[in-house]
Image 1: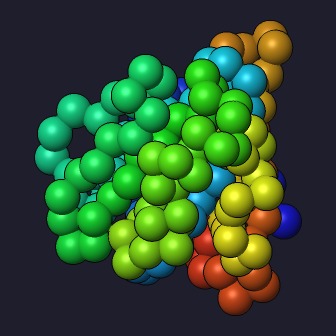
Image 2: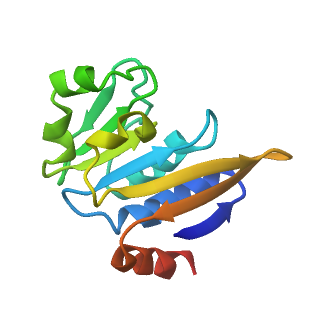
Amino acid sequence: MIKFTTYNEQETREFGEKFAKLLIPGNVVAFVGDLATGKTTLIKGICKGLGINRDVDSPTYTLINEYSGTPAIYHMDCYREHNIGGWLEIGINDYLYGDGISLVEWADQIEELLPKDTIKINLEHEMSDINCRFINISASDNFLEKVREITN
């Protein structure tokens, strides 16, 4: 696991842009953290780093936003839909096991559906400084080595 801190929204987005360069088609990134811990902010940076030049908002009510690109990016939000069967009915496996990059907010809600090689990001915020984010990344050793290179 790699742990590091960002101190404002801009730093969180900038890290997302760098992190995006490490992602390849088929990657699934699971984001976990309380409300307002920076999940969507980090995803906005990742999308920008992947060449998405449009507004990126959390799909809390639509469940999945698809962004065209090479590869396609699938931004999912599991906050409102906790039913695994519901996710299976809308075809989540096509996203999670497809050729795009899947970014899943509140991924702990569907953990049993996630591929075993999912990159996991846990976000927390400092209680005394709402802009401070603690970002903890768990992934394969090879991937973590690449993350170390962009965080040094």
